[in-house]
Amino acid sequence: VILFWFAWLVGCRRSEQAPCAGCDVVWITVDSLRADRVGAYGATSNLTPSVDALARRGTTFRTAIAQGPHTLVSVPTFFASRYLHQTGMTFDLAARQQYRRLSENVTTLAEVLTAAKYETVGYVASPLLAGPGARFGIEQGFSKWTGASDPEVTKAGIEQLEEVRPEASPLFLYLHYQGPQPDNPERADFEARHGAFDTPIRSARGATADLYMKIREGNVAVDPAGWEWIRALYDDAVQDTDALVGQVLDAVSKRRRPTLVVFSSDHGESLGEVRDRPYLGHNQALWDEIVRVPLVMAGPGVQENEVRSDGLAELIDVAPTIATLLGIAVEPAWKWEGRPLLGPGGGPGAYAISTSRSSTDVHGIIRDLRAKVLADRVAQEGQRFDLDADPFEQSPMLVDMGVDPLGQVLHASWASSRIVEAQMFASDEDRAVLGETPTAAPTGEPTPQN
Ligand SMILES: [Zn+2]
Image (cartoon, rainbow, N blue to C red):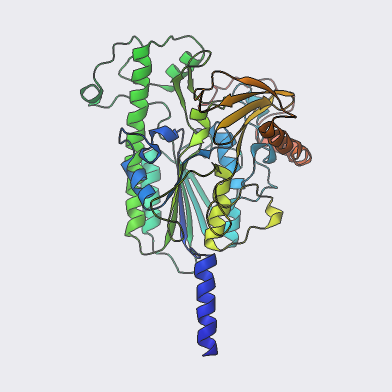
């Protein structure tokens, strides 16, 4: 009887405290996917039926914020569960010699799962994250990390999922799609579905990275029909990527192993939204269409068909949420700054921070559900936006960062990072690996698309 009672107690504790103990974990990110293109986030154009089906099986975090506005300042933050200024990373698209790699002092989710006997595998379609030019340490903790195209990511991911696994060795599979980033060519049926776009920028090659660059530099003007054409191409690419994601999710469903699934993007994308001048793409700006991302989780311990709109989720919360659901206690030594979004005491938070960083400045936003404050790190004055009245962030109110409640939190976050940051700048050895010296002139290499 005592033995039975003990077994019941253990089983009970496990079900309450670690509903997904031993689960496999599949985390899929689609680069540059705006939250507002996802049906689960209110989009009515049915571009993402696969992600929407996942959302019905799980929990959607309605206001989810990326901690950086492009790939190399977002992905390392969510793997390390730290704000950008705590990772050692810098990535400046305008001054390539200023790169810093991810500090080896951080503890990544993959390292934590490796220690928990997981096999950690990433298939990654971003040339900034994997491949010959990707030397930023993003793969820290993965036993296998492979650069691939979107179709190859799908194929390799499915093959990995179909492998028979030993019970004692669960899988952490990370799949990163390039998604709707240019080049976005016109599909064969493009005109039949969207109509003809009467715009001088239209070409059969579609929206190329080169065109994006020329528009950003002001060398190509875009008329209203041109913006509609660019958005149609983006939407088609979202739809195509969702179909690939759907193949992976089907493969997950066919397995017998309990699996925790996470779907997110790394940041969004500007598509000609009206500011002081229309902007396209993503780089250093922190507007809502760039920092708001989809975030859906499903699996044992995750409530089905649930939408959490009672606070903000940050992508740095995903790692501690996964750990909590798996029954892995988050150690203080890891210095994770995210908090569990699910489980006892977990949930969305009161605010979210996103930071951009270049060779010349650090600036960031802090956002709650109604307002957003944007500031440079060294500036005493910030800009506050009332997001209900001004959703396109066109009418800032100047605020004193020492007085504004959100501004105070942002400044405190930056202030707390100074010592850590000083220790984390890349060593001379790192710089040598990157082919740079502190005083190096620009290399003249083409600016990569993020
Ligand atoms: Zn990205």
